[in-house]
Image 1 (cartoon, rainbow, N blue to C red):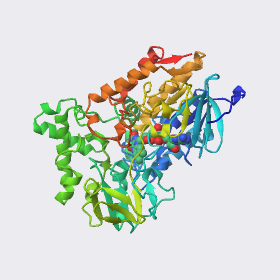
Image 2 (tube, rainbow, N blue to C red; image 1 turned 60 degrees about the vertical axis):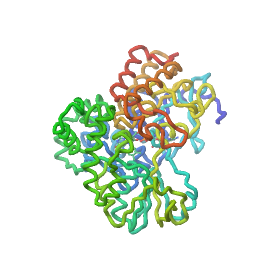
Image 3 (cartoon, protein in one colour; image 1 turned 120 degrees about the vertical axis):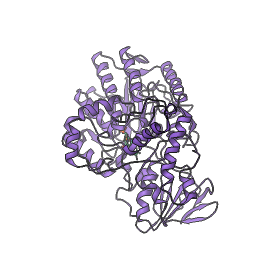
Image 4 (cartoon, protein in one colour; image 1 turned 90 degrees about the vertical axis):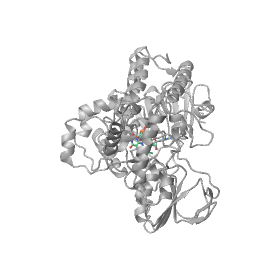
Length: 540
Ligand code: FAD
């Protein structure tokens, strides 16, 4: 912990220090600067782009269709065109460069700057922020835009460090790339990143071994190329599309569940709704009806539709049962569905083997491959598609100390508590965006960056206008929000799955971490607090 003291001139103090140069952090930088605040951004990576800087593995691409996954400012979308309906990581990177060119953001960004300490000085109401390379700043407000995927989850199989070939987590893919052509590739994990990298490795690897714990109930992406003429037509509607996006529950403008009860419909009507959502692709089939994620019988009908469509693509009945079981292992949609293009066909190929780790658990990683209870799989390149310590990991992996001297990690040792997922009691003048106990992964990233981000910007402007220097979440409000989170989740089928939404992929972590009831309802709570003079917060 740093022992520096703020014997500094006020012109050396920032109004706000932002961590993270993804959508959330860059939007904060842009908007706070617009409001005349003195603001800087620290980013651990070598470039702007947030997760798209780190997740550059083959096949990495968004699952929010155009134009959802971009900023809504006309000065940005007017001259920008995508090449695909679901753009890949490299196009995202070009987009961030373009945004930087338009908004001149990089001049206030310090790259390759990993923050290691943030300490609140309670006498002066200032945060002291220190980075790995010893650089430090004082700031009135500290805004953590560290995203949900800043800490990779690395499995602790015996021998994991003994493997002699290239071994990478998908979220730490080498920036210079990695050629899998004619290599024996092993992929551990079949979540969203696993599905994407498996599709690419299957095309070029001499042998691909996929280690699966839970089948991914992946949805058809229905990818297409996009030309400028099509986008020019779409752009006529962009102002309305972005208005709808901001107000929709998932931050995706055109995904609206059918409000009728699944079970009230006759088969033909129900199948027609399913089929339409299926053909639209992307997340449309995640919750074709508004009761898909809350009524177990309705959910089963959606599962059966998905299962029959999927099994029809898999030649071998034994494989079909592993990838799309007759009976679901968990309710449909209660783990984040991935989007796929030719995922199921990959397993029909002779060079691909599916290893069910429930039948033959991984015993160890050897110097040359993976040893399961049944056999050794020889591998040249090992890919860990094992997900993230989502939501909290990025915040607790460095030392954030509030006004009690306790770290955030210690404060959350018995469970996360926040006010509206924005702020934590005893951590004054600190905000989190896209953080735990807000809709986060249930919300399109850029929508969250803007809508939740505007709340923070307006809060800081309010405090400045009123001559206030301190805002802190009240403990009672955080307690209430926590209870509300649990109640909301209990009304859904989500707690029935062991998912990273519940922290279940991380040993010892099990808590409802996402606000499930829709982003618009979430923002109603945030706006209600403002309307009541920032209720749930103590201002001074
Ligand atoms: P991020 O983009 O995660 O950026 C956080 C930044 O903080 C990172 O650059 C990181 O380096 C930096 N950082 C963290 N800790 C520190 C530190 N201590 N010091 C300095 N810098 C730090 N969401 C969607 O809505 N649609 C999608 O299609 C989609 N696809 C995804 C695909 C993948 C592979 C992953 C991992 C996530 C995806 N997401 C998607 C979720 C995605 O996280 C959000 O869309 C979006 O990136 C959130 O932006 P952010 O700025 O909040 O966080």
